[in-house]
Each structure stands twice: as structure tokens, then as C-alpha cells.
Image (cartoon, rainbow, N blue to C red):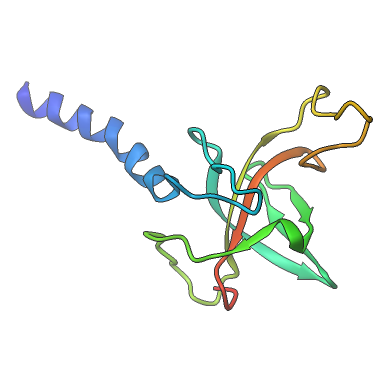
Length: 123
């Protein structure tokens, strides 16, 4: 019984530990990037002078270079060094994400962006 409880506790702790690599990360706007499960590793691709990141929902979203932080994420485990590895911190965009002037703030396609990271050198 004791082993069952320990095993259950370890399963609950593991996702939090995986997310700990984002604790304390700040993006271009100097605000904290993550408030729970907002960040995840992903891939990116370059299309001309733009960068597209793959969301958790499987959608490609264009992020302007001025919003990307070029920083390796400490503790990140890159499985394939040939993959364009990145990290994206966001939530789904809502209708209320418009500014008073009517312009969109932090909204890129279907997401409300907190932070986007690419390791220097692209991997």
C-alpha cells in the first residue's frame, strides 16, 4: 500500500518538475512567461523573414522576430539536434484581448503570446 501511495505521488510531481525549466523565465517585455502550463517545447520554421512556431494544438503561428527571445532554456532536453527547437508560452486568444484603441495586443492568430524562445544557433 505504501508503494502505491509513493508511486501516485511521484506521478503527480513529475509534470511539475518538467515545467520547472520555465520558472523565472522572462521574455522580451521583461514579464514572467509562465503561469502554470502555458509553456511547452515546440519546433519552429523560418519563412522568409518571419518565424512560425507550432502550437500545442498543431497550428503554425507567425511570431515577429522582435517578440522572440534568443535564449537556451536551462534544463531543456533536446532529443534530436537537427530539430529546430523552440519554446512557446501562450494561451488561446479571447475576444477581450483587444486594447482600448481596438488594436490587438500580444495576439498572433489564435494565440495570446506570453513568450517565444529559440536557442541561439537554432537548436
